Image 1 (cartoon, rainbow, N blue to C red):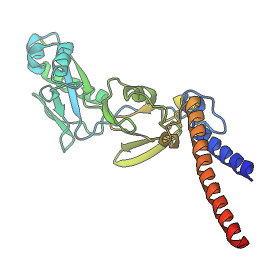
Image 2: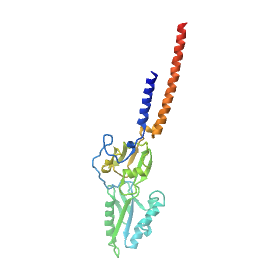
Image 3: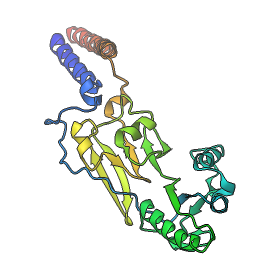
Length: 286
């Protein structure tokens, strides 16, 4: 009976420990889809960001006319200098309020000499074309007419990560992939689930939650590959985290310690049972 109980206890502890162990299968990226790793349809598409109320636009006007440069570009500083000045204020763009245009509650920006320009629902490329058209009309009335070109960028594009590595991170390029976003957040740790990454996204006033397995190599061709401004990435911890088991040596140590404790408890219980039986036998003989 003692051997049978010890074998059952041993198998249960080993099974529990191994099920909690973090294997390469659970953490590696770019794995071939199979029964455990899903395949995703080829739905890759990237759409230009649509401007919303509260966005801030960085606008720089290029012209051969120095007066035009000074009028629209903070005293004639070039684009790279303005970006550096904004960066010195802290964060990605620092004190960008002085150099950017807020999309107000009516969906407009207030641009010098032009006035209110509707930008909500448009892309930065469309705003660029609008500004160039309006400025060209004004420039034609100035002696020594010069063509103008406009640069338009969004300066407060960001995404958030909650769960294991919480934080808010700036999107510093036109297209950012899910892998780049995770890298900025410090990558996933051993006990972060790669199987159930959740992406919360608001678009056209509708919030959706997308769940995907970032281990699948098919992710690069799917709708989940590119993130968008204001996305929220939720990373949960896998159950093994509560046990802290991530190496074979740890598994062996935990298993041995648990078995030892189980045997110790069993010995105490068995000793108590034997003691009771002995006393009962003594009383019976009397």
